[in-house]
Length: 161
Image (cartoon, rainbow, N blue to C red; front, top):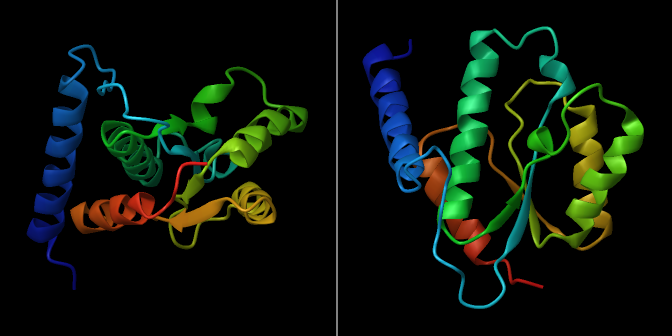
């Protein structure tokens, strides 16, 4: 049985951390000092199509909150982050995937944020693209502060190319 007060406290801590990161910019944007040298370039990969038609579900809300926290943490820690879910707006066509693939190929690492038991065929293809091009793959499915710290520790081991 899950202790709901512990889960709630963990979610509150994540939410507070995310709000603090956003407050740095004062306008909802995440800002950081200019990096010393070349920043590590990362791409967030995770399911997008699987949420179509379920965008108002609690599962999507939790996933989206995690994705935005991961993005904010990476930026706050000096990374340059490409977010495919923000790259294109409008009607999707698979020919646009080439842009995301190029971002993956040019990155130092990708962060796979697919929740357990969620179908992510496109994400699997993006992971394969990263592996075929020598790009580090870091798995960070939704979790809590401990998972954020593990993610940041893993990113620190990836050299900027």
